[in-house]
Image (cartoon, rainbow, N blue to C red; front, side):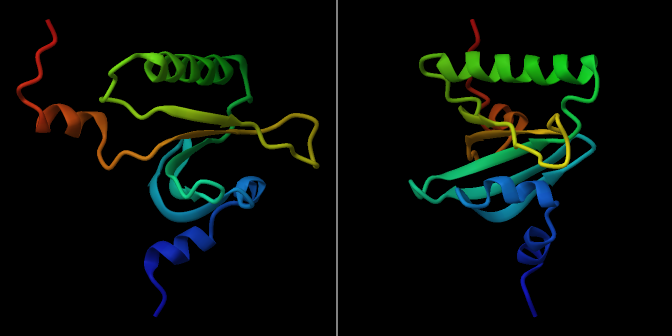
Length: 130
């Protein structure tokens, strides 16, 4: 019997094929109305990353603003010295679609972190934010 995570990776939407040459997909980490987060290995560096695909990122002005804000915040957090609390933004990929003049979604490639921000704070009760 095939591993459940491998089965789900094999059933990723076709848009993931745009980055399949550069990344080996390991496991679907999360899925929601925004899209999916996949744990992957960058083939050229063997670095483990998290890739977030935001579907319908360019559907309307509100979606565009939301995505732009997320990228802007991630860039700022990535540039902060000694930031150990959030994943670093490594790349932003807008897949080229042949069927449409405009892309539907966007990939955000980040450092893979084994826990989310809530877990970081609950596991580090000695944090001092003064």
